[in-house]
Length: 92
Image (tube, rainbow, N blue to C red; front, side, top):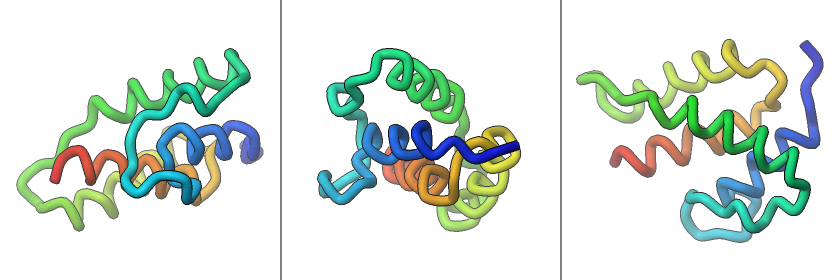
């Protein structure tokens, strides 16, 4: 699958992993394009259902990265890293 750079950039911006936020979070107001925001929120809704097991956040983060890449090959490495950062931050 081809990487969708617009969607990947939207994920980075939405999560705040674009350098404009001190911590990862939810910033839907940063995505002006309604369709792009909806696609981003759909991905987040699915990804945020994941929970760490007993392996610890560091190992889970590595596993999560591989899992998200497999489920969302349209996202670039930066967008996947943003999603992993958000989840690990939320579960810390």
